[in-house]
Image (tube, rainbow, N blue to C red; front, side, top):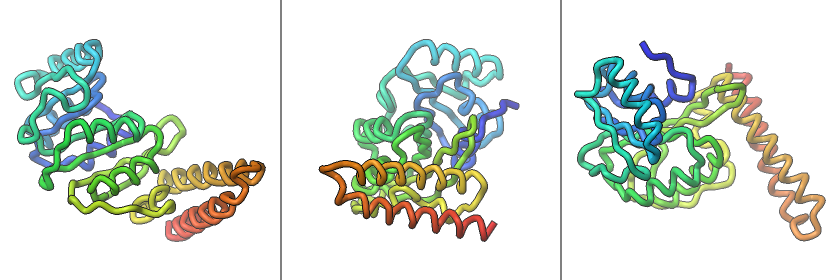
Length: 231
């Protein structure tokens, strides 16, 4: 069986059994191959903007005799696929802004679909952007990879657009799934916000904004401490 790192393993856990799955930015095709081998996915689309990763994905799928249950798609994001071909869409290993761009370009607004997203950067911008675009966050967990904690989230199109607070953008649903990885994630977010507050406090133009960032830092710290006590 193919072994996934914690990021992709968390993404795999959020894919629904019996789904037709698209993996955007598939790289070596490991996630699609594992989903097909386990029987969790009934069909897989390995998608990538570059030919070389797709060739590696083809080799992986061929190695495990899975080419008849998968299709390789060369293109940007979900180009080349139709919404009714896919149930669950995994977009992992990209920046939060890039993920939002892919969702915007695809324009898939089917409440029956689930998007499993794993941003490498700008997770807070991704959460804010999702809420503003009408996506609801269903579940979220943290995953450790190479000493760094990442967010992995499952979202659904609801059509309800809303603005979320700075705290919700930074924390998401992490408090609902306490773990060592979630604590590490929250601690990192607190450190980032504190550094921003300290920088603003030294700025002539942004000094007045520093207080709200210090307050945000304290709120994240409190959630992190509470999570540690529960664990």
